[in-house]
Image 1 (cartoon, each protein chain N blue to C red):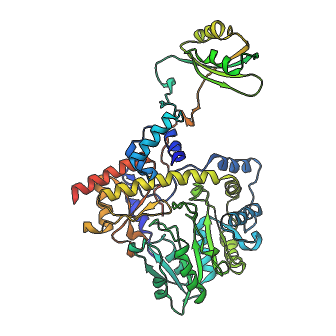
Image 2: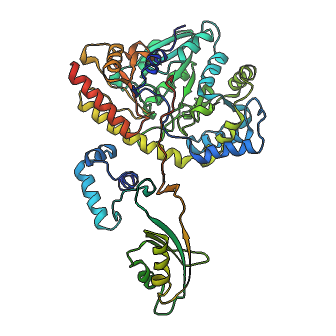
Image 3: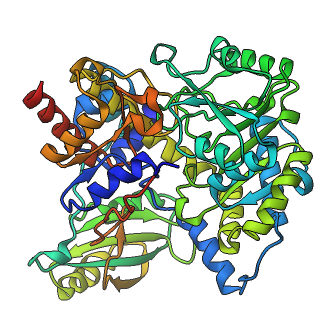
Length: 376
Length: 160
């Protein structure tokens, strides 16, 4: 198994003390104080014990209420939800629970780095689909059809997407859902960036399409929406047959998610909508700024409507993503992540995160401009 | 766009017009018009700089003063307030609910100067029945900004 491409890159960055970075995949905001305060209060009250394996019932009820409120989906908090240590644990548990040896998992790339290794660790066979920039990195029904075999069991959908910022809207999801129903394919839908979309319309989950709730595990968490990465708090909702199997693995491997974090999570879901709206607005402003500036300097980027990444193309410059990122780091002491860290089809692209203040983004863009003028 | 623009410049009035336009997804002309409109209609009332005077050599004292008044038929709160806020020394004047009527914020060079203002100017205002002066000892947070706090990026560099 290969070490993550980003990690390798950031080992070099870590040794350059004056380097600045647009590489980080986590919010720059602090967790809102009322959420932190709820965690502190739980500690003061002595709530320092394990919770049940599946997590605090109070939190699972809030999660069910959230899906009811935002997606008109009904999940039974007892049997159809459970709390994980971040979305990343839920990805692992879902694939382990669903895959038999030799089962194929369709994974559209570029994508978050853990799906392929997790599928392998679970005994599955990852089948990747290289998504296309001209489709704005959305998955098309033709691409999906072409990847399906008799062994296909699971499709991993990760939209809004890290690293491309792509989203899938209702019109994109409907034909995908139809294929999944017809070919009896389960979906693991990683919607960790679901609160961060910029079309003016809320994110749609594939689980809300007819006949999909019973074949979809939705993975979500608190890290991106509420700026709670360090709390390690995520969850999965889905059909009880699968959730119960995931829970078995979880109780042996993990016991339960951190209790303090779970209490903070209750507060986040109850009273955090405004915080999310504020952060979303700030991200959106930075996103517009970055897309315009990058396009102005000739780094074409399609308009990403989700997450907090832009994915500009460097294909016209005639060097690889790795070379670009390495030389940018050496010459300008600025770190961006080469697209290849997220799959071979990321060649020719860079991932730039806008989880940075406007002042930092400005400084960084100046360095990129300088770099391009000097080298090309 | 209006509310988003206001939220944006409320915290940073120095963003350049071109950037504002990009960030709001609007044209520069549209943003410039909107700002002019907001200034004209009294929504945007001024642009200030938040200064932590404690970090300068300048001596300043700030005080909060509770003011109780007796309103009369021909002298309501608004008229009395005007008699108070017209003094240059008064930086802020609010009508508030609770045990007293006005909250007045003053700036002076010394405590003595503030005390003199209260006893010679403020208390004698007709209809003022009582005052209580609180000197500010330390400012921790003003206008949403924690003073003296320097934000450092503490995110570790191993992110996926």
